[in-house]
Length: 207
Length: 164
Image (cartoon, each protein chain N blue to C red):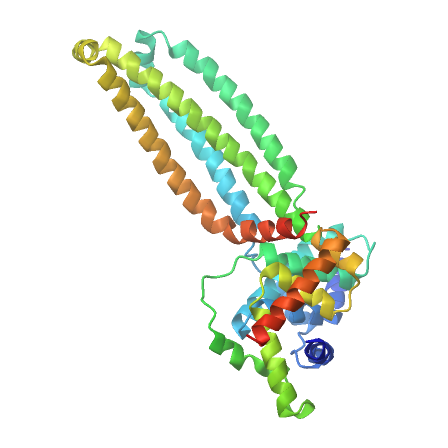
């Protein structure tokens, strides 16, 4: 084995003569090309997530029909307060995200770079879960308000309370599952290699 | 002013490009992938250059950024790498330098190295570059003791691959 490694070391040093040397002009062109970095993708997708999650909220709030319904059940003002809180939370999350994103540095150690990327990514994940929780809560409230204010549904509700609870719960669980699967796929593909390599490094350094 | 920084960077990069080529050789198995990875490394180096304060040699800093690019940052295309591509990628072994037996031994070694995972390849790279274990440990972000242990395990793994 040592023989093989010695031979390899010898060849390794000689191999420098075998690579086609790129000129300064060729290198100039290269450094200005588009990056194919995972960090770029994470940034783009994270920004999209922040925009979409808050954007949907915004659209719903200013829908006239929704406004009227909410006024009827005296929830419209509550919604406004909740929205303000949400925007404050959004700003906080974006600040944390930005702060962590800035620590991502290609000159760091291999382990540190992976850690910083995963940490940054986790912040957006927490923000997504926060929003899912809000969606679950507000849709439950909305469904039951709707039911109580609708005479036909209300009648149904009084007779089949358990069924209605189960159906609502079931729908929410299914929505969560669909979202979770989609999310896992997206980030599973993007971060699979990173997670595997990070796991490998942690295995080595278990001391 | 910006042009001078760019010029000095490109000059340093040209002088040290073999480090990048050697890492690409370990992490890719065909010319196109080699070129793509090399390009991504140059982009990452250029992006990180403003923060490089010369606390270490340019070559040391460069190989760290290059390793990080190969292991973590670079997003490969989903091309499947066939071992037959590797055979065609033997431009680095000059026949006249070795006897047939040595050449076969070398090819087998490189093939075996390609079967290692990304972290193991990084260790082999630094071993072949005669880096001491404290530098290997610092680059990877692990302890020196564990770097040595892992290196021994890799040697064992290579032995198993070469002598199944």
